[in-house]
Length: 167
Image (cartoon, rainbow, N blue to C red; front, side):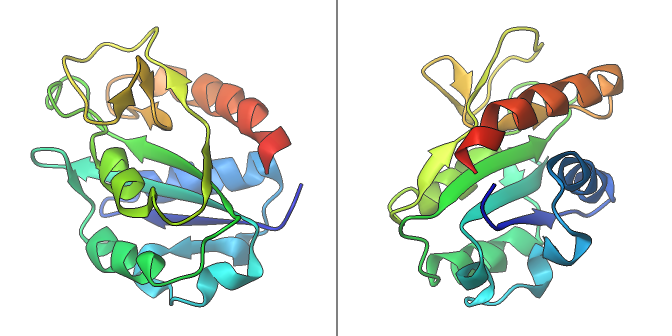
């Protein structure tokens, strides 16, 4: 596996906890796990792969720190890097925007020259709509640790197994 970092935005601690679980399962050192509020344009330079995680707020919006963080990453040289996205959402209370914030990250970085990996089938998910679904798949790992916490570890394990060969 190439040098990988995980960058997350978390307001309640859930996305941070998910980022730490993913890091553990991939063997990513805790020094390579960053709160998006603390990154600089040069942060990605030392890495070949970036895993980007956000929670979804309101009507499908990014976690607050990601607005500046996304602008920072847009200013970084991401050409040739591999990106995988994961997101946290609430499929019951916000069923019509479930994990939609992942789409904002993807949209912001899709022309960066990076390769995106880690799309996940929507099978087994219960929600009404998501901007993060393209061609019947989530553009990354969608998690509902509020209502479906019993599925979180299994979904992380399957996603990590899927992306590990691309990192």
